[in-house]
Image 1 (cartoon, chains in turn green, brown):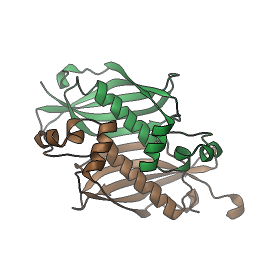
Image 2 (tube, one colour):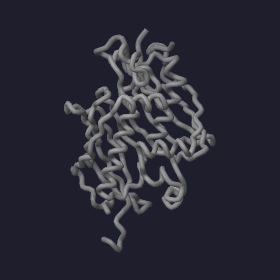
Image 3 (tube, chains in turn blue, red):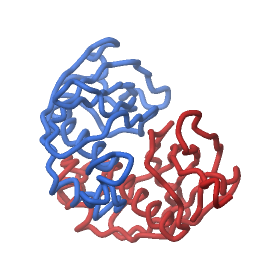
Image 4 (cartoon, one colour):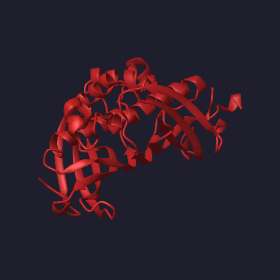
Length: 145
Length: 150
């Protein structure tokens, strides 16, 4: 288990594999982001995106799934305060395969809670061509040893 | 149609409300964020949260849903988002909570290369006790008013 003391600025982790399907893009969009370019092939073709794309928040949800599968079991984290500087850089389309590269950016000790600290982690979500489709800096709470 | 030109700094919009159920929290968490305090009611009771709480990504998804519905009511020519400056999950969201959305325009600027403009706004969801549970500052793109309609 990696605690606050065990992660270091500059550490890089690569993990996850998420196959994006048309069915899942449409299902997420129906529930949470019912805009035509997330829902309907024909409408999406006529849009500036030229075809169906995933909701950006859906990409975020797929990212957290990969984090919970691969990072959470081996890092002593207790949720996150949020994130900064989220960028949706490229469309995510049916058939894309996503993965994550995360880098420790900064460690902040808590003044009020000596049992924990905040770690700023920059994550880049990439597709099968190595293009970054989304990036963000998460503020993750780590427990101390 | 509400175009980029029609947004003014300081204007605020009520986005409407959503009451969240335990079934919704579990369904989202089991698919996308299966940490025990989001996906397992019994384990959640024993966690530091003392009960089931929604994934922060679920809360953001609900905020998006309310924003899309508000855009539709206003007939706003929204055309996606390049991203967010910040997002903070401020309070736990629990089954039965009623979340009400509110947004405020902070800044607007035109694209130099495309017939669109950008709107930076703060969006918050407030629970039934008046507490903000999530606060974001994000950017949305809107189409410009066509010259013929100006």
